Image 1 (tube, protein in one colour):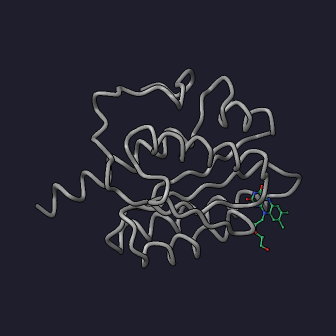
Image 2 (tube, helix red, strand yellow):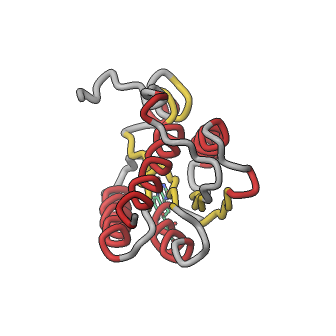
Amino acid sequence: MATKNHNLSEYDINSVPDAKGMTFGIVVAEWNENITAALLEGAKSTLIKHGVDQDDINVMTVPGSFELIYGAAQMVKTDVDAVIAIGCVIRGDTPHDRYICQGVTAGLSQLNAQQDTPVIYGLITTLDMEQAQDRAGGKMGNKGDECAITAIKMVDFRRKIKG
Ligand code: RBF
């Protein structure tokens, strides 16, 4: 699918399994809090819309996106069916943002490859604040919604493959 005009909040509702009884951990970075709070809200409301009990969503914050790796690594050890990692890295004056993005992407990838619980990539990486707002409930939808749907589908995947 072309990403240019892809709205992150649009999905085929019939393709989403019933999420009743599923449990989720959400790790949220405090950096760019205006954006990550909106992503969190999207993720939570979409999980609940698909049947998840509010009490079955465990939200923990970490200071910045780099700490999502540790946060998610700890969260997968708890009794949750999937973990969503939410952060927002905005391009700065130095290459620091790129190192953070590479680190988080590699760290979360490693978690997915090495342990049993799915970890969902909810990091938005943008050139400026406007692009971030567009993806946190603005004209491109909400990446948090997309993460919630992905998380539900991955829990369903895991259940099916384990039989
Ligand atoms: N964390 C984010 O989640 N988003 C950012 O855009 C972001 N930019 C940063 C820029 C600089 C120059 C530094 C030093 C840190 C930044 N961080 C950002 C925080 C980072 O993820 C981590 O919390 C800190 O580097 C730990 O000290």
